[in-house]
Length: 143
Image (cartoon, rainbow, N blue to C red):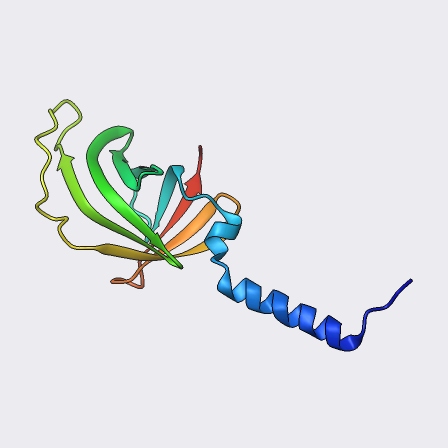
């Protein structure tokens, strides 16, 4: 068996460490495009959220309260090294299950909404709000 010199071994280790710092861990381990179930913290009883992120950087979110669709959001999203930012969102919501959805509006969604993310597993992402550090979301990819 042929041994490699210690200098070469050290250079190989240093190179792999540098490479791991320069590579985006998201690109290496996960594909963000897909459909997700969201669990929010602190937990809001009876509320369930589903999100779809498209490869053309458009997204869609539905919110259900006790199984009844209550609100919908259409938005654009941008991914950087460790940040997911939502912008240009429009929304609509209804007050009862048998009520009609109103027209889309931008009343509350003009500002950017940035989250830091951490990969917790192959299909599990943890998003933490930049504005409210007590608030986070666990996204589980379902498709």
